[in-house]
Image 1 (cartoon, one colour):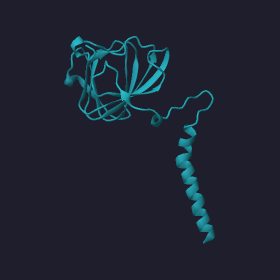
Image 2: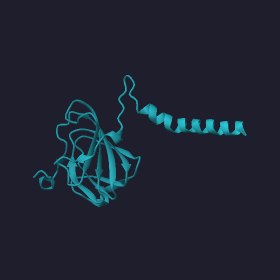
Image 3: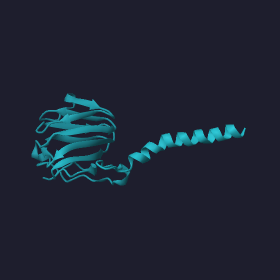
Image 4: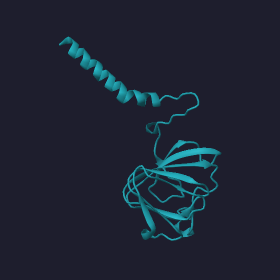
Length: 162
């Protein structure tokens, strides 16, 4: 019986190390690698150029400075971003929720494609597009700065800064 109990304890320890050991190792920086733990970051209000309700979490870099940047945005259900464009290419990954995006100069729900968690797409600089969140959505956005214009609305009346 003692061997059986010892075996069970060792097996349990091995399972714990396998399950949690990797995440602990990932959390440590190694030379040449920067580790970011999103739980250490805080959601902030989106900038004044974004419709009310967006939250942003900056993970790495600064879009206004040269080099790579990564941030996450969280938007509520039924969140709509009118037609707009960016001055840089962006890789957008859907982490949570259902995100809709369409290409064009006018907001048209019939031209939108649906993207779910794990999907990513690339919006090239100057592409006119519009977005909608059917549910609460969290996106991860990656690009290279410096970004000249974070967002430019095609219709000035859609710009919250006006």
